[in-house]
Image (cartoon, rainbow, N blue to C red; front, side):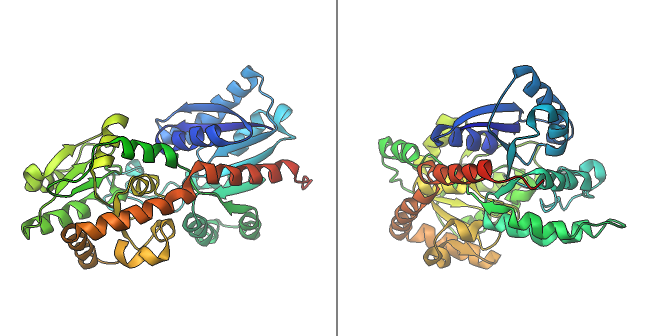
Length: 381
């Protein structure tokens, strides 16, 4: 079967997901994409450009697989002479209804609205869901989070709120996790020099954005550093804006403990993964958590908040050792991981084996089965 994968914001985790699935699917995957920049314009105008590309390239897929960054209704309208018969699966990497806003109105994605959510982007997600034959979410948390908030969103409108559509969309939805190349990541670790070091390396491998709450992470490190605990820290991740003086002062306070600061290319990032013993998240937004899964695959021990998608990433038997519910419990887990390195390394090895469930070898066949079902479903009209 020929599948056209449409990725309007093709970079980072979206690109890794698309290329990963294409590499492991038993179907023939063709990609139609735009560069990963100007995300608001991608949601507004990307469908127009991609529709033109679709017509120009004379594509003839059996099924469409599109991401949440596409205005699906507009795309289908502009290509209706050639797509009216096609089934569509929409993959929700994220959504613009429950994505958290910055606590500082002048920062973040909605800074031009002074921190007020622009509901038009949420409506694009909603109308795309209505136009899809199947909706796939990257985690159970994401699916639950959106459907719990969708009735309240529709309730804002003055009439004809279409609340019954929520149940219909829920029935049309499923969960398909993001995949990783487990074998490839493990090979990189096995080929690397032993990570035994004088002090443990703590890795931050997320974006430097407000929703990842980096300030809390740095504050926790400053606290345990003041207690005399020995560790080093690598601060990776992409920064889209200049960082505040608050971040800089916290980083300066850590001094020589900081062995890497800023974006790391793929080679350097994998090198840091081979050396790291601990990774930490303090995020108040995470619909899946691919960077954490990659780190755990590479035998890096996770310390994560007991919220968002994190509890479903790891087996329940590890929750008490990996998940925290307060600043105090975060500090306790950090102290324990640093002071009892033998136990930390052993648990990290067990967790690495558990990450096989996210291997594309396991995940891609699940996608293929759902896409087969979508292709064979009878039309509602």
